[in-house]
Amino acid sequence: MSKRKIGKSPNTPVFYLKEEKGSCIDHHDGTYLGFWIYLMSDCLMFAVFFVTYAVLGKNYAAGPAPIDIFGIRDILVSTIVLLLSSLSYSFAMLASEDVKNKTVFWLLVTAFFGIIFIMMEIHEFAHLISKGATPQRSAFLSSFFSLVALHGLHVFFGLIWIFILVIQILKKGLIPDNRRRLMCLSMFWHFLDLIWICVFSFVYLMGVV
Image (tube, rainbow, N blue to C red; front, side, top):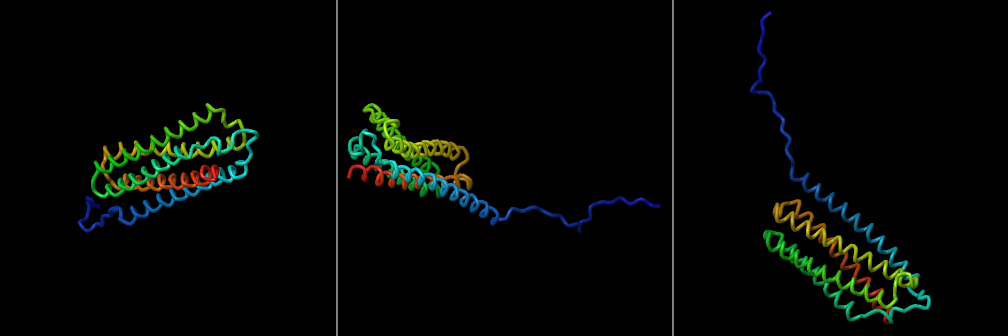
């Protein structure tokens, strides 16, 4: 029996795995959908805290009422600061089309406004506690501190996310993954602005009227 050396025929089909553009789009769509689901769950959590405040917000227990402790002028300033951070983030999104340095600049401006907002919130809490308006004083103060602190905690984590994203952009540039992260962070940051407008209107304005 003769031995034949089996080699690769030039007609042997060769199969390649090729990533289609559509699969990348589907991946991004899945990421955005997942993030929207997270935002909806976050919205439900805030709704629970708003309802809790609506139920307990009139229980002062012989303690201070909203009109006695809320400095509406300072709260208005902090609201403007947070809205400016939303505007600066919009500029970051516009710059992300092609300019890395401008994107980083506007992200840092956004972080600057966010830090000012957090500092003003901490100052407000310290001022209230120094006057004896602690969360343990009444159901109103407990629900107030819980709602406002929950929002502030979200802003704090948003700031951490901004700084991490700045590092990623400086290292890898405006790659598709970083653009996707920018978009998710944009939804998160504007969501926090919307929640704060609700807090400002429902808690502070209605509290002093």
